[in-house]
Image (tube, rainbow over all chains, first blue to last red; front, side, top):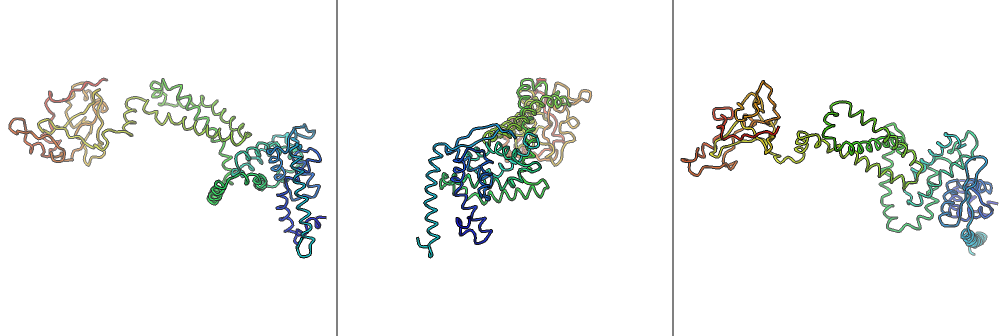
Length: 127
Length: 363
């Protein structure tokens, strides 16, 4: 599955790690917003969901930094809920602005992705 | 997990380590990241397995900070204008070099990382800040009575004990403030640090100038150190209006205090006693008798001039001494006035009583 989505990244194992990490940095916003579209979550829970989806390269700092940046931009809101297993947790939720932002980014991504796929599928690199 | 003090300490320590590596981020972004970071780390720590540390889960703090910075700078790079970006880029090699050298310096001294060492020094700074606050208050309270109390108290350990007792609550408050400010944002902590610097400066400033309040003697010596009106004068050669050299002279100001001009130590050859206790008669100084019962008070009359035994007396060409217009009527000739005189010799007799200043010391 990964090979189909990231064909170039599977030439060498170590190249995969590095390139995926750099690619993912540009996609952090859409990744985090998409996770929160499926349901509110606190910081570490978002990371766990992402790891469950195969984004092993993403670190907690990347997720936390992205959450704070999206919050400052008004794409996210927060609320605190008590936890049974420990201290209160700060949950992040998508705002209306965030939903619009995600929608726009998703369209852009699908457009770019389709064009990239066509580019790679073309025998001589011609679209 | 973070219910335990150890868990909370781990979180605080990890946060501090991350913060140290985010110093170059724009203020609003760093503030926002750090304000929420401790809560976030607490959540992470609550989800960790027993026996694992935050580093096990999140990696080393510097790597965490690097990742955090990269994420935050996606936005900040766009906002920063070209000028500041170029300034930062220009300074970056120097900053990196300074950081590396600082790390080497502390590591070679055996105290570990510079940031860690700075953190260990913080309580010391807090204590100093508290002492400065106490010193300032002490000065403000005792300022009015300082002329009376300090000369007495400074003689013993009493002053130190009084100050130590008084300083205890101030040091406690400073320590408390320092511990609390660890949880605050970088902006507030910088404000507290700036206040501390000002406080230390103000707290120590009064004591730097305090000697001038101790009394006339302290004041004179203190002022003389900084604004001596006779700076550069090493000796005094008194003459009468006739050009007759005078030796064995005391000098007083309008209040009857001795004028301390010159430095006996600078003489090539000094009288046996620069105060004249042995070498000169004190007939010129009528009251009180300086030699009474051998209790000569040197501070009461000052030096006896000329100070040095071997210096030649200045000539009229060098000194501009008054030369009588008519040598027959008004006294000695210019030759007499300019001839070097041995202060210890025959010519160094004290002048007539009616020609000698007769100050009446106020004390």
